[in-house]
Length: 142
Image 1: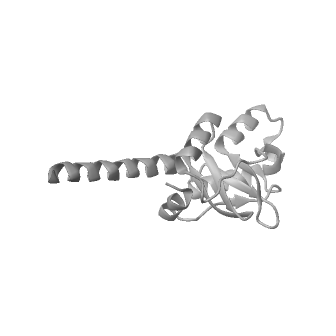
Image 2: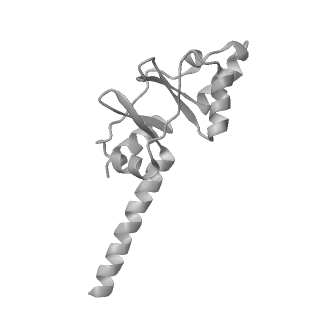
């Protein structure tokens, strides 16, 4: 299964922020949209970083004055990205081995979506469920 199938099922909505935004603004966006990460984009909308809940907690604990921090101060960069043509299982393995939960999907330099570990696990379960149903039907017809 390709990431384009996962994005088609979940939709292309992705939340972005400029690096200049305050951490408070970013936290409010995460809470308002019930999401775990924001993609940090430049003026042209090209992703160059990511700010996750984990980044916020890690930096907040060490910050002298977190109210003055910006997204650019706390984001992870460079950000690893995937393509819609990438294999979903391979992306899931990469995310698991590198211990991150969100991956932007980029096509021709343009942000087209984001997948999470949850999205990929759900897609895999649906694929396995379909395979099991097919096998059950074949066994019943045999």
